[in-house]
Image (tube, rainbow, N blue to C red):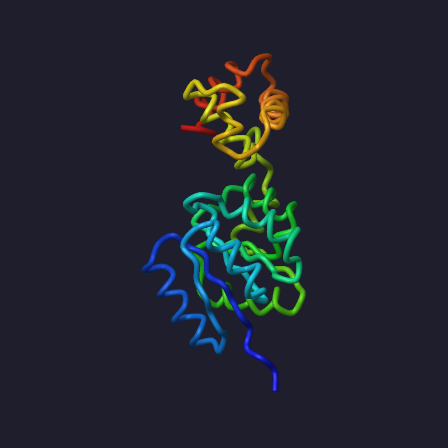
Length: 204
């Protein structure tokens, strides 16, 4: 007899976690939950669920930070991003990392069910709305989530060392993100990058 798919639901909203747990159980799957990054990592490494369903905005660590860790330490757990965002740059970053599915929260639930079943069987799934956005010609520079985080902190006056401490990366890695962002935005300095990103609505 085939074992039910084991899913870890990671979301910082209790109502969202409980609602998704009820839905997933109704599909004949087993569910566990976590509310923030470190708890999610601990449970994934301990339970090794078939699927980890991650929101992108969590306390402590972002969903993509968790995905990076899991893909290295527990590669047998498939990652499904279940997010309110359909930003093409974030979707591309997630898929480039090795995330196996990306589903937006306002999509029909049968799409989420299909995503969970597909990745548990070794496949990949991208929400049709998200797929259409990826095929569309980008309207302007596309920054990754991490590049936006660095720019926001620069705009707030943080130094490379301070940004590194905030994001748990080295100052050299911060410098690399800034250099890439400057190139993407076609400017000369980091402050021009911040100003350009603010005008374009890439950061707020």
